[in-house]
Length: 171
Image 1 (cartoon, one colour):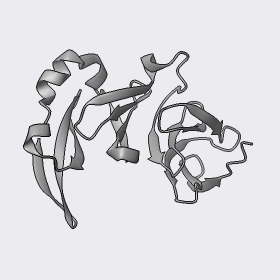
Image 2 (tube, one colour):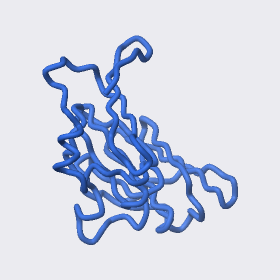
Image 3 (cartoon, helix red, strand yellow):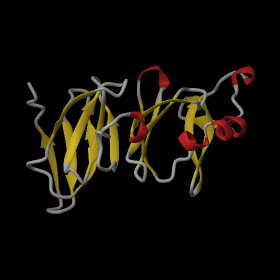
Image 4 (cartoon, helix red, strand yellow):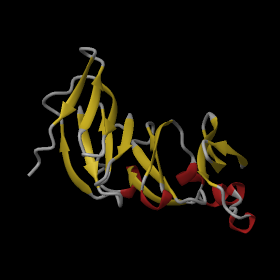
């Protein structure tokens, strides 16, 4: 755990264990008595905190940190102390809502997860409940996504070197 300055505020960097070493997640600077010893925590929850291939990070409400783990086809949710509080996908739900995970984005209404094998985007609540999925008819080789404040979803598709704005006509 380290500290530093980012912009006008300060942050605390939390290193989470993963196959390639550690995965640094900036979190708000907390008083020393709230610090969590990740080594002890990781021993107890080794199966949960071992991020074998973290590919993207998003910050949601209440400073929750959502980390996309490609190998596990899951999203691991951490609180501001670096504690795992939820798994979305993999063992967390049967059947797994994702075939793969390549990117994620936080929008005003929830989380968006890019699933390149299924060629779709999964829209979830911040609690991990599926809202709807879309894009399977228009995506060929999706690699990245972004969501704006108006809940418009943009996906980069490597197959035709294009960026698409996908409609959320899910009603």
